[in-house]
Image 1 (cartoon, rainbow, N blue to C red):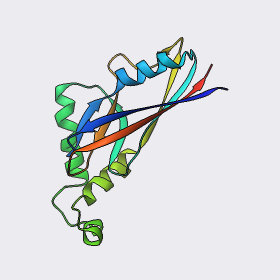
Image 2: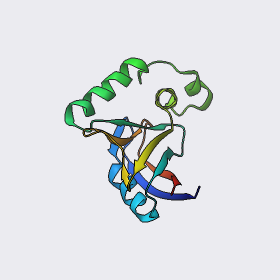
Image 3: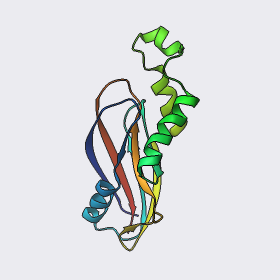
Length: 139
């Protein structure tokens, strides 16, 4: 089964910055010429993650609020004691979310739900330039 890898950069603001990357994934899929298979969406780095949500204003507020309850920014993290960079919360949030997502595609289209988009969330405590890796398997 053929495998094709595509990459694209993304500049983020950090602090649970959410980006809809569905258009970039779809563009890359069209470029591969593959019709049926899966794409793995992966973000390089340990303070960002990938998932799906309905990319709408309410959830763009709800999701950061939920992460703040799960892994608050302003508590002590042993990572911060070790490195002094103040982003221990970002590592914990990214580990909870995960760095990758697999999405099937058929007839050259992503099999996402009507209100479902692929998002990258950058949790770090500063702006970053992320590299998103897309690995397509199919025919």
